[in-house]
Length: 223
Image 1 (cartoon, rainbow, N blue to C red):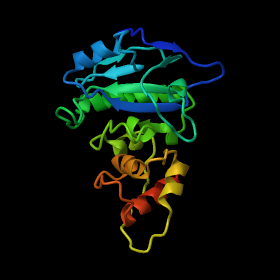
Image 2: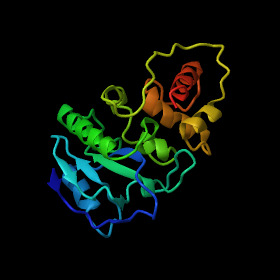
Image 3: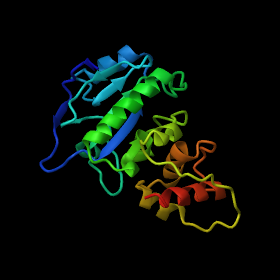
Image 4: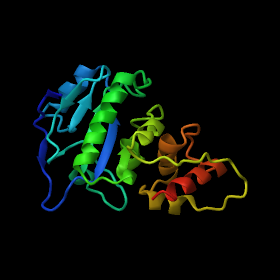
């Protein structure tokens, strides 16, 4: 663990504790540029941790404090996501530059770090999310290349055990199911796309086709 303190934090509100874990990618040209920004008081952004592509972990903000990573966000009826979450940034240039798969050393470090966080805090699996899940109209990170399946297999987050076959006779309501999972559906296509990015990356078009609806139902069954 590399101690790289960021000045960008404040106290959590009285009586509020971390019950969410939010994954991000940095979306910048280099890891150093991202680290500099997360530690720049003028930028007014931060996270609790940053993990470089070689697996090096930087602790920026102590978990007891409120880091500034989620912005305008929503999950399961809550809107002050920074108040109640721990944020982890993964160095990755993102879609704007050269989005690529997360290398194994980085993923291994993330799993170790996340399991430690889950052991220290009462965070249910349904509250292990990506930035795009809590801000579907604004964000797309950590993106469709993030290994949510592998994370769930390691005990981090949710993944439905059964494959979901497309069907033409599905009559589930996508908005109701997305809301039950936790999504803000004020922009329904964006919410559907965010769900797809997390749980059904084969399709990223915001259309709740039969297969997407079946996958939605499978995730709802885990909530």
